[in-house]
Image (cartoon, rainbow, N blue to C red):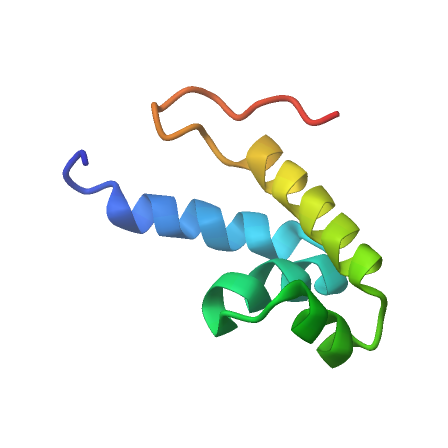
Length: 79
């Protein structure tokens, strides 16, 4: 890790998460932070498991488009 980049990386991550719609942000955060299964997230959000899986996929794609690769490369184009 390069010195002094931790705060910048966290700032980029938070801005990218803030740019997601609320449902996608909630979906993408519940699994790793609360260690919930797709079924548990679906129950919490009151939707089907398929919806949770699709929201998570779309949120991951959006984040990939907004965040640089760990190698330091520019963000990938979305779509």
